[in-house]
Image (cartoon, rainbow, N blue to C red):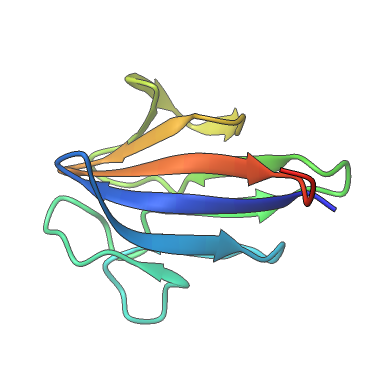
Length: 102
């Protein structure tokens, strides 16, 4: 089984590992977000990550004020691939996929 996670980077340093468990996970400043990031340039509910039935993870911008960028490009929706970098102000979420065999 393949597992997915985000590495939360601040200025290139890993601050946190966030497993993606397959449900809809919201990213933003609100305490109710599954991936809370307390940073002024983020909306309360900035974006969401969804595991689709076909096994792909998708990130969607939730009409945030400052937008969502993946690999330096603004996106409304993006199918995540190994190594994608989601930019959120001074933070980066690095998308990682792992199979149990390494």
